[in-house]
Amino acid sequence: MIKARGLARRFATKAGPVDAVRGVDIDVAEGELVGFLGPNGAGKSTTLRMLTTLLRPTAGEAVIAGHDLLSDPAGVRRNIGYVGQRTGAGQDQRVRDELEFQARFYGLGKHDARRRAADLLDRFDLAGLEERGVITLSGGQQRRLDIAMGMLHDPRLLFLDEPSTALDPQSRRHLWEHIKQLRAGGTTVFLTTHYLDEADFLSDRLLVIDHGSIVGEGSPDELKNRVSGDLVVLGTPQASLVSEKFENAVVEGEQVSFRVPNGDRTLPGLLRDLGDLGVELHSVQVHRPTLDDVFLTMTGRSLREEARAA
Amino acid sequence: MLRDTWLVFVRVMLPVLRNPVAVVFGLAQPLLYLGLFGPLLGDTGWQWFVPGLLVQMALFGTAYAGFSLLPEVRTGVMERLRVTPVSRVALLVGRVGKDVVLLVVQSLLIVLAAMLFGFRASAGEVLLGLGLVALLGVAIGSASYAVALKVKLEYVFASVLSATIVPVMLLSGVLLPMSNGPQWLYWLSRLNPLAHVVDAERSIFNSGSAVLGLVAASALVLAGVCYGVRTFHRESA
Image (cartoon, rainbow over all chains, first blue to last red; front, side, top):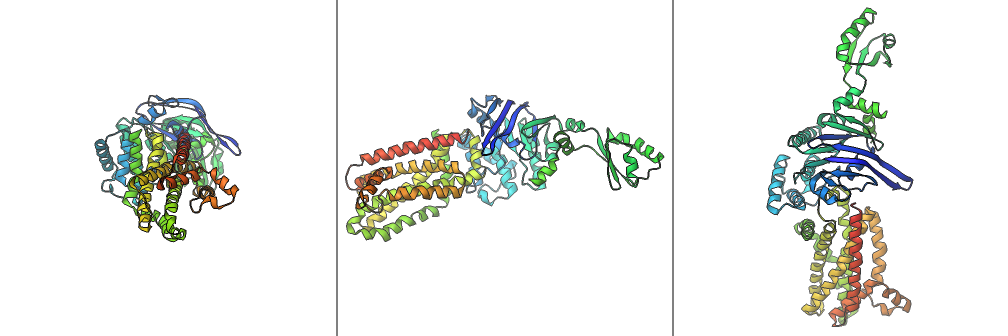
């Protein structure tokens, strides 16, 4: 559904050229839900803008939904849906009008546009808001309207740029359910996010981008398995003694942490050995690796810190 | 493309129709000129002054059109529209269409109001005069949207506008005849296409020849629309 080769974008700035995206290859099969994960400024949105015809690549080529990105952008546009990061509904418009015009921009007749708009209003819990001005909607309602507009024409391929940004936890959950339903209905979905839980919950496959290059690829579980082992955290007064027994152990006060493969199965034997050494333990924790650990391993930076700094 | 243009036109027209207060306020300025400046020119001044006022309305009414695009650029509206298959030309022309329709309606109301003061015009003259005003509106409106799309920031756009509109207006002779001034000023005004449009508008309402002004207005339309279309294409890959 997406096949991109060497896609790159260089921006000319006063301080000289900036390579926002440095030649990425992307393959997405029909029906897949692929997450594009990376910190702010990694090149996610620039890549997405190139794939959706908003920004012309400075190098590379791509075929999107069966149409060549460079020679047939109109063909690409007819077959994709796009929900941008910022709100796409006119503030001085009414909800129903924006939906119906959007459908008609994709070539639907007046009657079909009205029917589709009504369908999506129902599906996204927007029924009853048809006559309201967009400006009077809550943040969550506007976001749902954006997403409804992105899929009015039933695109085979839907791009979502940071879909859950600015949503409260409940709306995020709802949104995730909607996205999962889309995928179940056969729509191919390509979404960017810098939320690890979102990427983890939604994606069949993840692409990790940093500094304009793809630095990792795989299912969330595959990526997690690349981090060598589970994190074990022990609370003990003899932390330094314990730390000598394990490679790369980190001591913080009365806490020692280290990684072991298959932590859940290794732990009982490990605790017995420590008991034989006369080590006294207050607490024991085992953490499966998170995508944050994955990200840290692959880029040397924590995604959470990036998100907080942004 | 016609269908796309019509859709874009109706989409931007609906909010105006729902809230026509802005259109009424747009009439305040020309009405003030009509009531507070026009009488200074004496009883015979109306035939000379009103056509100029119509051109001034076209200038001020459409040069600011670009402001309506900036919120849609800042939020994701333009971006959303640009990912649809809708024609890039329609995105521009549909909007300009709205501004020109409003301009023509406002101009017609001003002509009718001026008639109460003593302005005389036949139906044919009004039709031709408003046609010329519409042409000018298309040219300036297109350019305004293109410039807004380029500069992207309201405060920059505002200063670009005041730096261009004021000299263009002063050198067009809408308020006082350019021939009243020194030679150099008169010749400078001859370089301003708008001065020829003003002359043509006056000729139309005083049974003279409007050919030069129509040529000037058509050239402005060609330049404005080409610049607008090119900018809308370029800014959307």
